[in-house]
Length: 236
Image (cartoon, rainbow, N blue to C red; front, side):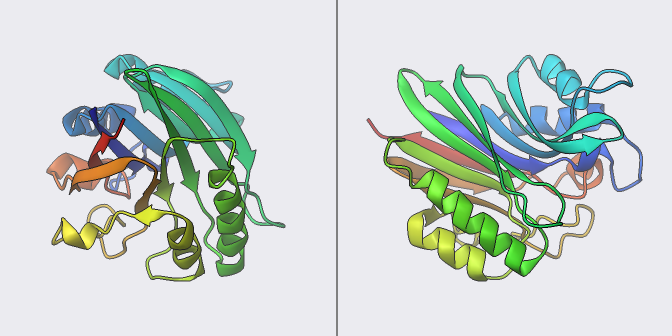
C-alpha cells in the first residue's frame, strides 16, 4: 500500500508576484500528483465569492475538509486537507497561545484500502514560547493511546533549526530527514528559498520511499513556500 503525500503552505494563493491565483496553486498540486495534500494558510467560505479550497478541490476532483483557525476579511482561514481517498474522520484542535495569532491542528483519518492512516496537519506560530506550547499540545494529541495505527504529522512548523519544537516532536515521532533525499531542502520563501520550515513526522508502520521538493518555474512563483512531497508505504 503506497501513496504520495504532500504538505504545502499556499499563502492565501498569493504568489511571489503578489497576484492571488488559486489556479496556479491548483496546477502545482496537479503536477505533484499526491493522493493526500495538507494545506496551510487556506481561504475558505465567506461573503465574497467562492472559497479557494472549494475552487482547488473542484478543479482537482479531490475531496477536502477545512479546519478554520480564524476569520480573514470574513472568510474562514486556516488548514485544509485534500484527498483522493475516503476521509472517514475529521476533527480540529485549538493550538492558540495567549495573544498570538490563532492556530489550530487538523486531524483527518484516511481509509487506505481498509487501513486507517491518521494525518495531523499543522501550522505552528512564529514565537519560540508559542511553538513550545503548541508542540507540547501536538505531542499529547499524537500520543493518544486510543488512536492506534499509522500516523503522519506534517505542515509548516515555522522552525528552521533544531529547536525545542523539533527536539520534542523527534522524541515522540520519527522525522523525515530531507538531507538524506535532497540536495536542496529549503522551502521558504518560494522564489529564493533560504529556510526549511516545512516538515513531515511519522509513527507506526510507515516506510518513507522517497522525498521530493518540486522546484519548477510555477511552484517558485505560486506561493511563498514550496511543496514538500513524500512517497510512503503503509505496513499491514
